[in-house]
Length: 503
Image: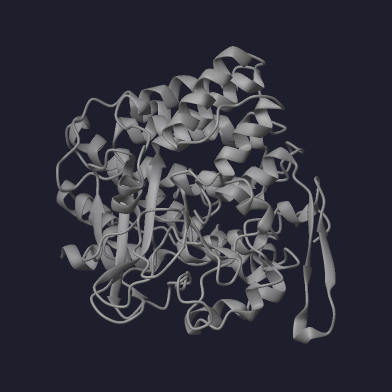
């Protein structure tokens, strides 16, 4: 019976953000008791820890991560992290699948990637909506329900936040996203956008509700129902909200409060060996680390043999055969030689030591080395969520945004000491914090792309297809492409929704 309940829930979810509320009313509840509700939530949680069934086929149609591979690929290629002139020349065989989308990302118009993010996030939101609706009709102590509600509400909040970050027009409050949290509200739900202000308030209220729950985490079951994770998510939300059209003067203080709560549990990395243990586990295949000293959650996915088709990082030490992803020369120049995140390959053999970037003098290039290449017995995807470095820099930035420069410099210099780099001396403190975020989170999914969006970053780059001559592309500070294109099928289905401007 449990399996039938779970399959019914998965089958209900479709690719439109409104499909998951457009179901015929029935007189029988889908989930009849707490065992069924817990099992339905467990399916979702298990797909996060062990997403691979065979090859790279996912176990479940819905996943808690917002389009993990797509966001990592899309955001890195659209950002200023990589050298766009060198990237198409890579011969690493696994990279060929990513070169297929490179012409779109070089123009910041990877529309199929936008569609995947939209659909997967709304699938997850819909799944959580359904579980939360079913829980309302189950008679059980509230404390028991909180264990499941906490997981569902935090996962839902993560996905809502990602949709908002990717699809909102950052400086126009009215361009938020459509959002319905009631799976039974089919008739009255119109599907129009909520403003960014409205969406942020929903997120903040929902997460503060979870902070008030009294149920204890359950070892072996709970993943996202964790008060420290909620604080970390709220710190991210207030940080992103602060410069937006929905921003308020107290956002920065809120971000400090919540980030500080997280730093009571985890600490900054101070040596490469700790980075190595966080981003690479030799024989860690499909596991979750909830006890890492430097991140609240670290997921390791992979296979026990062969190369995962999701590994796009290559082998930066071997040059032409399996070369790594080339870092833009401007970004590479920001790393000091004694920085624990920087490694210079003076002579073979190379052994991964935890550095994020590796300079190979033989090719006079710097490559991403955060995710090391190993053919056998290794994880091929690593996702470290809610890292101490992020929380620390959120606090430093908040003080800088409030012109509390003494405090900002103190937090920034503490960070720099941990990375073995020079103290801050002069220049714009806010810009310096963003530079540190850029160095620290290289290759980590959407971090740099969303920093570019919220700070109004502009840059240009060249692409030379088929050696036909350089073509130059420019992304402006207020560029419309910072707000992703809403999928056409969504607009066809949802007549109350309009496309983001200029797409």
